[in-house]
Image 1 (cartoon, helix red, strand yellow):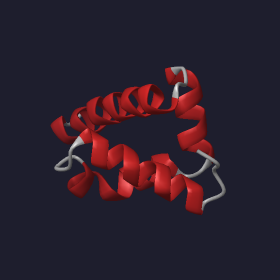
Image 2: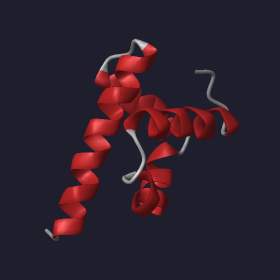
Image 3: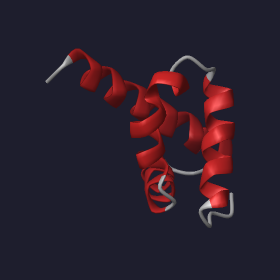
Length: 73
């Protein structure tokens, strides 16, 4: 597994954890929500930018993206 792949995985796990904390969800439920509203695709496409932002900004961006795709949080 490449270093970049490991970095993306680590970042994704941390982002899901922060998202869960922000919205009072379990990490499993946060993952399901993000995945359902295409957030995993966003991470894959925008990791290069997202990982340079604070987690607070990334969680805000993820929440906004998910809302645009039908999410309610």
